[in-house]
Image (cartoon, rainbow, N blue to C red; front, top):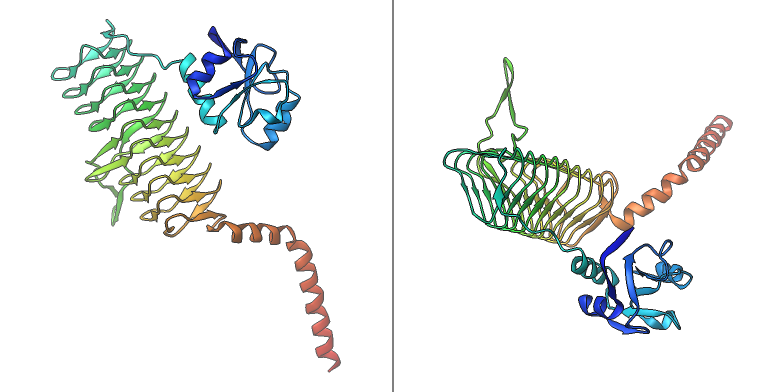
Length: 346
């Protein structure tokens, strides 16, 4: 349940998201809740036809929806995109916290590191030699920043984030707890004495306005850079291997794994638990369903699913046939038996 820090009227919330009030613009909203749990002083949102059906019987005092026509007599904030409007409303009443400039007494800033006066360095945080932290950046408790790193203005590193040497984090990018950026890529050369580690001496570069989820790992490149582009959103427990180049405004859902040297085009969406083989190119605007196994290059704009991946509609047909497989196998056995019998008679 999200109780508003200060109650606001429907008109104020509509102004925050660019919506139009139909009904009581002076109604005071005290919280934002789900359709099932909202009460007379709460705002709830309806994003599609199914949610609109639930909204029609909801007790929510204010609805955020595409059209008030579905809800006669109700107070509605009309918007073209309820999800985007909800994001705007929540951002207006729950603004992201800003840096509280200063260096905590327990923090360690090594020689040669530069921390801007407007940055916040929290308890037991470490900033390594030669690293730079810009104004407005936040390093919360127990963050470790290695040597020669760059933390741009407004970046926010949550507790226990670890940056190995040579990692750059772009402006306003948020990195959640437990994420590790810049660990060694998984590179070994086989030889007579066994596996020999290939030194990973490259770096990691995260663009601006990106988000890296909790306990995700982005490995450093062997020689150059592992890159994540501007505006890309990486969910929790995602693995990005060494030398990968992930484009702009990409979405990588939870437990997705990219093997090394993979390229992912702009605006691609990989669903949960998608696995991608190494040295592949995934085009721009690709959509991959959850648990897809990508084993070869994927062209721009493709929608894929299945293991190994297939065009989405083909994957649906395969799934349908798999459900009928026991019956199909039974029929095939009977046909084979009958054919054998005919051969004996002949």
